[in-house]
Image 1 (cartoon, rainbow, N blue to C red):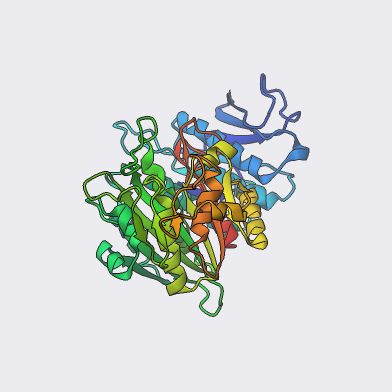
Image 2 (tube, rainbow, N blue to C red):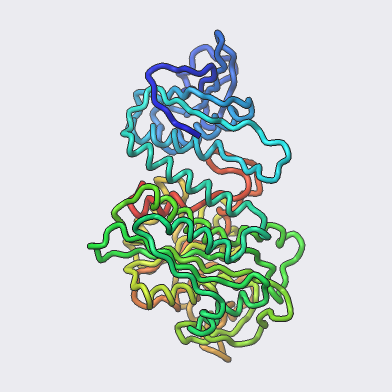
Length: 464
C-alpha cells in the first residue's frame, strides 16, 4: 500500500474521524470508540470512524479507529482512499503516526489460500498530516514488519519449518550491517546444545539455531539480544496434544516470527542500535526418534534437565539459545519472547502478555513500550519458590514444576528459563495469549496471527 500526502482529497472514498458530540447531522452515529458507519454524500463514499470524547483522546484510539475504518473500506473493495486526519488534537504528530499505523495494520488480511482474492487497497492519501516524513516512514516500516511476521505465523507448518526460518534470516542479513550464523543439528550436537537438539531430533525437518547480528552502532557497548521461540509445529511430542489443542500449533513459532519482524524493520530503518536476533527453531514431532518423558538431557550451559513433559519444549530450546547467545555474543540485555504457557491466558486473557524480569528498570521500560504501542504487558513475580519448584531429584532441573499439574505454570516456566541466564539483564515475554487471535478482527488486531511484539520491541529499542 502506497502512502501519499496532499492538501485536498483526490479519491471518491473518504475516511473521516469524529468525536462524540461533534459529529454533526449523521443519523444513528454517536462517534463512540470503535463505531464505524458508511454514508454516501454528494458523490463521495464517506466512512466515519468514532474516536469517543475529545477530552479522552489518545494516539492508540486513533490507531484503532483507523484500523476499523480501513477494514470497512476493504469490504467496499476500493483501491484508493483519502484519509482526512483528525485536527486540533493533543500531540497531533503522534495521532497522525498512529492513524498511519492503523491503516497498515487494519488493512491486513491473510488470503494466501483463498481461490478468490479481494481487491487490495493500493493507495492511501493523507490529508492534513503534520507528522515528519521520517516518523511516518519508520511507522510504515514497523507495521510492514509486523505484517511480515503475521504472514509467517499464518502460513502452513509444512512451509514454515526450521530451515525456512533460517532462509528468511539469510534474506534479511544480506543488508549492510548484518551478519549471520546458522547452527545445523550436527553442529548443535557437537557443541553440546543437547536440549534444542533433543526437541527437534524426531522431525524430518531438523532444528536450527539462527543468530542474526545488526551492528548499527559499532562504537557503543550496549547489545540487546532478542531470542524467539521458534517451534514451527508443536505436536506435544510423546506427551501428545489432544484434538482441540493441536490444530493451531503452527503459531508456536510466533516468538521467532517477531524476532524476524524486528530484524526486517532494522534493515529498513537502519537505526543506531546493536541488536542480536536469535531464532531457536525446531519441530516438536512425534516419532521413533522423539525425546522421552522422564529422561535426562544435558544443556549447553552444562546443567542437566529431566523431562517432566515433552510438551514443555519451548523453555528447552530457549534455554540453549540464551546460553549460547550469552556465552558467544556477550549481550548486555536479553529479551526472550515465546508462546510459552497456557497459564498466561488464564491469568491475562488474549489482550495482554506476561512480563517477567528481575531488573526493575528493564521491566518498566518494556511496560511503557507496551503502553505506547498498545501491545501491552503485565509484570508477574519471580520469587525463589518458583525456581525451587523446577529442581529435580534425578537431575539439576526438571522442565515442569514438581507441584501438581498447572501450578503457577507461567512463573515456573519463566524461572526455568532464568536458570540459563548468567550475567546479562533479562526479561521474558510470554505471548501465548496475544500471538494468535481465533476471534474476529478488532482494531489493529487481525484474525489469526497478530505479529505481537514487533512494534513493542522496536519501541523498546528506540526505533519507533
